[in-house]
Length: 411
Length: 149
Image (cartoon, rainbow over all chains, first blue to last red; front, side):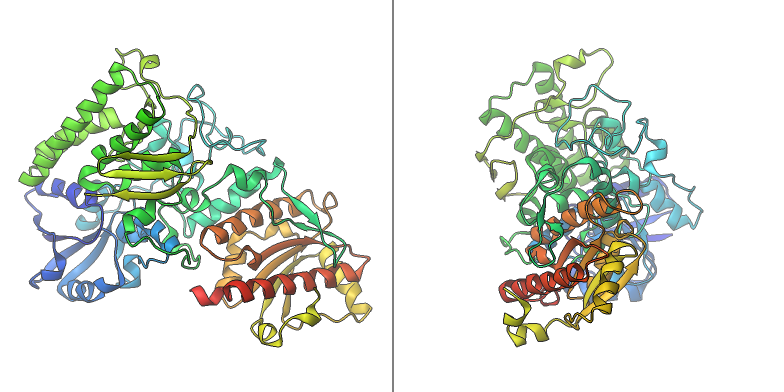
């Protein structure tokens, strides 16, 4: 079977993951890093990875006319992925089905290689359950009294949403990355239904039913109406787009943003996000350098605010950085065995390839049973306004913890 | 400010204002206004729903994506929902949706929530007037919602 993997824009984690296809000799895999200069040849399967811009239309038409089946692999290709958050600042990022209507979608950040194999082999994938069904935490769906931006990790039995900590599990399918297993809430990278973000917005709005909403007297009708001032509802969720539409903004039906762009898509994705969400976002879009970028952001903030970290945390972080180098080496040599071995090691420490286990001040779950978890357990940290700079990363956060400006080089 | 002071050019831009009205107080007040022959802006399009709690961001975005210039919900007075607390839940969802519009750089006046009293037609007409005034302000400041799509 002839499979061609095309890497378009942005993070190349899904592109790298497809190295695992070369393990089986029945797939004749070819990697095309620069689709614009691709010499057209016929293929059975064209796998599209990375986010898509309007100018990619011509290349995609060429790919379509030369392939039997086109597959969008990973969230960037299917729904614009985390890069689609740049739409908030007027950028145009489109899902593959805007160019090729009959393409098959494989959602997920990271896209699952097993699912890609199922599609290529034309096999039936087992029906995936809703994430809440397989989640170990139990929900009551009671109205919330308050909403929290960070939680202590003591309770691992109660649903995140019941704790007032927004989790998109309601609208997500079970996945391999399973952020929820690492005390990180689901952000809905594998939606179980269409327009998932906006449905979750309605759902969470309902859950907030006990929280006071600001109303005011209407002069004209002499009745009540929603007030225009901020209230507990809006104060508790300072970044609604980043939390509800992290992967689906381009397919959400919301209008394109009017906020002026900074000129860089990466910077636009990060601007407006919350400081506590930065590690999960950098882990999602950092590509080859997601580990070093995530740790750089975390360590910059920790150092400036004297957040103490233990020797064990330092040890594990150093191991992660070494593993990143090994991974780069495996990718360079297109060695599936080494790639698999290294990613397994990264998953052991970082939780998954999106580094859900990595956070400010330590880790979210115990890495090794022999360790004393209290030694490197992360805790709720204070949001401190200021400008943070460390080599290639510089960011400014406002008093409520929203990133106002960010400059990242070399991603 | 009243509707009479709005620039006719701005009023012309308002073609469809979708108002979801609950079957109890909302629609009741509109009926009372109709019986009393009270006039309101012809762009207002009333959609009768059982309770504003039925209306969520999906229905509001569908309306806006299909040509509405603005959307509002009119429910029962606070504490007087004929079911349980549908009007309050709707308020919460609309508040979040307003925040989404703000975060995208749009005016948050394209979606609103009001209450009205069935026995007083002027409450419904007053709400309609308020919707039009707010939409006029938003159009003057930032253009219609269609300008950005």
